[in-house]
Every structure is written in structure tokens, then in C-alpha cells.
Amino acid sequence: MTTTGETHHEAAGGLWWWDRRRSAVFDIGLAVLSAAECAVEGFAFARRGGLPVGVGVLVGLIVGAVLVLRRQWPIAVVLVSIAVSPASMGFLLTVIGLYSLAASDVPRRITGCLAGMSLLGTLIVLWARMAQDQDRLEFGGWFVPFMAVTMSLGVTGPPVCMGLYVGARRRLMESLTERADSLERELQLLAERAEERAEWARNEERTRIAREMHDVVAHRVSLMVVHAAALQAVARKDPEKAVKNAALVGDMGRQALTELREMLGVLRSHEPKGVSASSGAGAAAGSYGSASGQASETSASASRAPLAAVGAAAAAAAFRAEVEQGPCLAEVDALVEQSRAAGMAVDLSVEGEAVPCDREVEQTAFRVIQEGLTNVHKHAPGAKARVRLAHRPGEVAMQVENGPSPDGADDGARLPSGGNGLVGMRERVTALGGVFVAGPTDSGGFRVSAVIPTVSAGGG
Image (cartoon, rainbow, N blue to C red; front, side, top):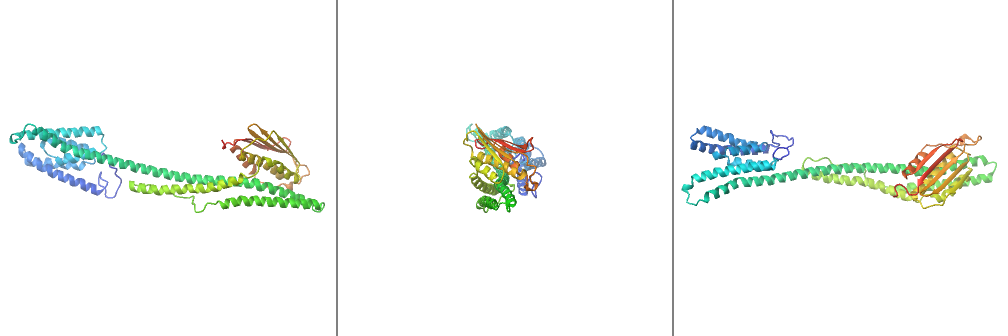
């Protein structure tokens, strides 16, 4: 930024403090005209003052050439014009110098002071010269001061006003350019954040879907495996019981497939079409025009990026709506009966009166009990289990505890486990503002317990 308020960039063909060749040519042309004018006026001044003509012309050339510095040092140009005003030279130097000073970023008090000094100097010189010629004029005494004031104002006023207008307009354009660049950066940041939110939403839904599929399918499959093992054991000894176990296996398999198909169907039916999550942001602009154009492109990019989050959120909302139709605490009895039918000895106790809970709270409590029973099937076949459900003021507590497996239990009946069930339950319970604890008991068994507020942390 120079003192004239112009922002100069590195450009091909720049010369000294000029950013463009045409600016340099323009200023040099003005300096040549000013030098020629001052040389002519210096010639006349030298003849009137009895000085060598060559000296007057040389001084005029040097003084006029100072105008070439108007963009870099406008104060120096105005001071030189004030200094040579008694010699009646430098009209172009004064006008262009005052304009350049007013259009620059020089503080306004300095601009006003120098403009006042130039006005006073021009007024005194004009008054003195016109007073010398008053004898040849036939006007009254009012004419000299009137003409001196009018001409001095005409020389200093218009260039100062024009310079102030051009400087204000230039600063306004710079402000708009800076604002456009800032807006473009903000839009680019918004686009990047939208992409991050879309990716975060996708990851969250992947985790949520994995949890739901684990809860729904793993329990059913574990029961199927238990029934299949029982079927294998009694197939020859008790054909009637074998038929009954086979029917249970078939029913559980069909239920697992139905629930799995419903989940996948929801995801496919709400899959976003034609939405790209990897929208790019516009590049930074180097001028005001390109800044506005690229800001609009970045705005379009930023508007496309949230569509990815909207697409992922649409599938997530649909999946959550489907999940909200899932199990509740009223189905705990049926859940326990399924485990009993698989041969597990389960004791269920319910304390307190059921109170209204958020749907997500009831579903999470049900899943905790379901996961606890599934773990008994997987890791402690033949062990006795106890399920406790307590409704308390402002919270609901649940506990699944099993003893050690009997000594005669077949270790080969233990089912494989990925170790993610308890992790998922802990994340769910803590997300609702509850407490989750799981670990072995002193008797050699295992205990899973949780306490969840009846109103979820996100439900207000």
C-alpha cells in the first residue's frame, strides 16, 4: 500500500513504485508537461528578476519534474509547489499535487493543513500581482480581493475535492474486496466443515447401525445355536423335543432375517441419489471481480457440501424412526422366556411401578438386558442367570448376573464373540447420561448393570 492508497501487486513490467507500465508512462508524461510549464514560467521569472535565463529554465525543469513523485511522496510535491508559488510557476504541479495528496492515505489533518497553506500562498501571490496591476484596471477596490480569493479557491478547491472523492471510492473498493475475500474464506471453511459433519454423521450412523444389527441379530443367532446344540443332543433320545427345538430354531432364524431385512431395506430406500460429499471449495481470488465470482462458486460448493450431510442425515433419521419402533421394557418378559426356552435357568424380578420413559431410554435398557443374556449364552452355557429391573424416581436400573458354568458344561458350546457388545452398551448408556458397569463377580460369574435417567440427556 503506497501513500496514495493504491494497492500494488507484483506484476510483469512494473517499474520502481509503479505496478503497471501505463501508470509510469502517465506520471512521466505529466512530469514532462509540468517541467515544460515551469521552464517557461522560470524563463519569465528570470527576466523579471534580472537573473540568468539559464538558471531560471533549469530551476523550472527540476521543479516541474518533481511531479513524477506524486504517487510515492505527494507531501513533497505539494511542499515544492508551495515553495515556488512566489515565483508564479507550477500551476499544473499545484493542481495535480493537491489531488494526489487528497486521494492518498495521508491523515486528513495533514492534508487540510497543506491544502490551507497552498490556498494562502496562492491567494497572497495573486493578490500581490493584481495589486501591482490595479492602476491599469478601471474597477473599484473590491475587484482585487474578489478575484484573488476566487482564483485561489478555483486552483485549490476542485483538485482537493476530487482527490477526496477518488480516495474514498478507492478505500471503499478495497474494503469490498477484502470483505469478498473474507466471505470466500468463510464459505470455504463452511464447506470444509460441512464435509466434516457429513463424514461424522456417516461414521455415527455406521456405528449405530452396527450396534443395532449386533443387538438384534446376535441374540437371535446365539439362541439358535443353543437350540441347535440341544437338538443335536436329543435328536435320537426324544424325537418330540427335537421337533420342538427345530421349530424354535426356524422361528428365531426367520425373525432374525426379517429384522435384518427391515434394517437394510430402510437404508436402501433412503439412500441419497446424486449427492457428492466431496464438493470442492473455490480458490482464493486476486481482485475484486474475481473475488465476487469465485465467492459465488464457493457458495455453490458450500451449498453442495451440506447436501451430503443432509443425505446422510436423511438415511439416519429414517433409520432412527425405524429403530424407535423397536423393543421396550414391556417386552422383557418375552425376552426372558426365549432364554428359558433355550434351556437357561433365568430368574426375573421387577421392582417398583413402571413410569413413562423416553423411547430411547426404554430401548437401551432392553438392549442391556438382551446383551447380558446373550453373553450368558455365549460364555457361560448352562449357568443360572438373574435379571433385575428396578423402576426408581427419575431413573431405571437393570442388572443381569450369572453364576459360573457347571463343571460338566461343554466348553465347545461357547460361542465366538467379537468383544463389541459391552463396548456398544457402555457407549449407549453413557450417551443417555447413565452409568454402566460390567465385570466378574466373586463367585466366578459375571455381572452387567446399568442405571439410566428416565429422560435422556439429549431429550431435555
